[in-house]
Length: 267
Image 1 (cartoon, rainbow, N blue to C red):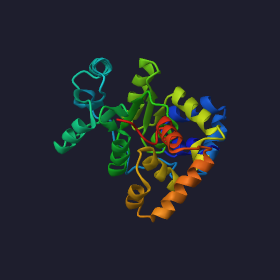
Image 2 (spheres, one colour; image 1 turned 90 degrees about the vertical axis):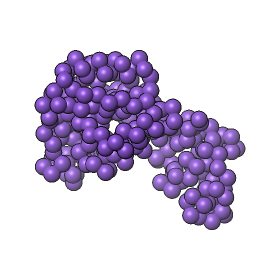
Image 3 (cartoon, rainbow, N blue to C red; image 1 turned 30 degrees about the horizontal axis):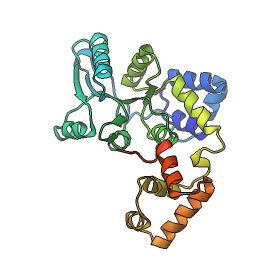
């Protein structure tokens, strides 16, 4: 069974998540449940389970820099959950301000691509710091590394911006109830990426992936060596090995690959 399916099942807490995986992978429900029982962490954890608050007490955080999209999401939330309170953020800086004010939310809807950087690190940090944190990623990004990291972040919800509004509503409902929801289009995208023999995770080691992020940002061997606590000769060897594995022939090609796959971003 592909590792991304296992990763989802480890977080699956309701029948909807299991049914979605079955639909997108052509695995029977019975077979999937047999596989489910074979992996640690598959059982629901009472310590992490949280009851859904009353609708009129719900507190949402909407992280989206596009005003039109943000307005739609907020309007939909107000209609579906009358009396709810909504906090909005359009950048990482605004997210940090909200955190400093100790704002408590029941569910966050997060676009990963913001004007001052990716929100993925914030999502991963939030999930690690607060087990059971309810977050739904809503993103149009499809770069290999970004999607891979998002799928392995333990985030309970993931919807693509090409999905319908009804899919987003369903994701919000399932995640609010303590479940896991990955939209069919997200599952299909992940399946296609994992089936590619040139998928980066099948070629590069974890350490090489870390180095590639820095190479893609245009850092020199000396700068990368300082960050990774390695000798410059080791970093140079990493650079040469990565380029050979990816069949790249120049630093420009290396940076182009890193940006196109989501390892690095140009700002």
